[in-house]
Length: 523
Image (cartoon, rainbow, N blue to C red; front, side, top):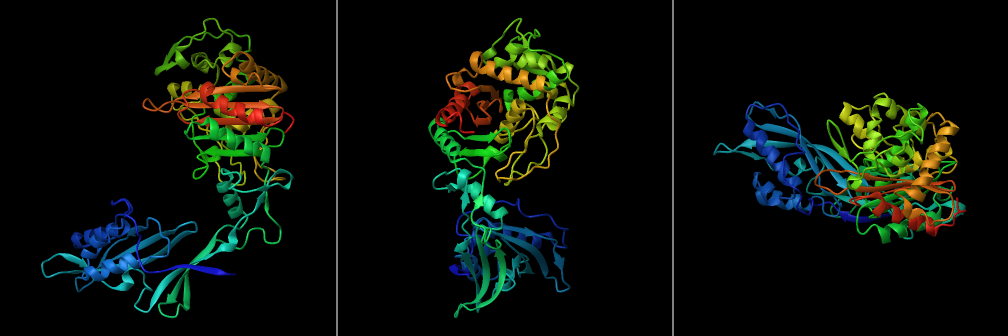
């Protein structure tokens, strides 16, 4: 394979890294703690890019500084971690401190190796690192150096529905997703760190390799379930409606679990759409309502008062301190009344909401969607305050747009289908279907939320649109996150806007734009 040399070994990290002692593990106390302290200080300076200071801790300050600056030049090392181990003391009074070096190579992986720092006591009683090239790396010497070689043939190609080509340039949010799918298929970037002759460049050995064989060699691009129409609509909506805030969205087909769109704002970096860990807020009332309906603890017509406040260990309240005296459970759902739902906590066992989430909705199982994901959590509450919070999707309950799109799909179809990005993939998560009467009531409640409740912003859309909004508290100092989980004609969609204040104000307009842009029969 054609390898392009991108640089030579010579030196250190090039930028100023954060100082501190955090990366260095404590070892056994040597006979002279001052020697180990000097070794750790040397490693801390080296890791932080303070090469002059590191050099001053050695017996050859200028040579050490120059070597450390040049050691990783061209190797594209980012923020090395240097971890000291237990020191040993020789009879001659010298101290040796082993250490592990982890050198992250940008876009490839981590080059890990071990070496040793020799220290000698000086005439003035202080300790210095006894400078030698081999302490930087055991194979570093005056005739050899290191070189990074990258293989440019690791580019991953992907297609979506109908064989349409997908790329990060056309769909920015898919760039990280395609890279992860390619890596799982055995592709992605590849390269190596090699020991070479300083003069001739002849390779004398390979110190680290990154990546594997080309992705799906001979089998063509990686096939995905992404629908270009849904993905384009999601990308556009996030760009125009997120108002510069962190936001994410997932759309999937309720009948199969096939993921149609994954979008994030910003589009690069962390994939909060499938890996985020958020309190889902009142969108979780879909699960809580399911638990109550399964147990016949309420009916839509049951009167469940909705006061402004309710205290369970701490004071809970409704959005904008709303109250609906004499409200029915249906009204509580469509207006997203926190206090009403919390007042029903004693009608469910402590573990019941979490058990329903796992048994019927698959939450908390490992979904294996094709890329790393967080698949929700609904642990048992620690006390009654925890239980009250869990009733409204707060406290220890966690999810993301993937989780809540799947919850919505299960609620309106009756059966959990494991979400996936890879067509033809069958999930292994075992769940129990929801009874038809529970599904019918959930669909009715979600439809009423659109026609008469907090998701009225979706009411002008064609098709059978249902939804549940959510406003999730983050902390007393930070603004609430805005949520909505919706469905239309076999497609479930969920979105979160960090700091969006409320679901109605931030997430509903975003999802409205997506649904308006994709024809109702595109499912």
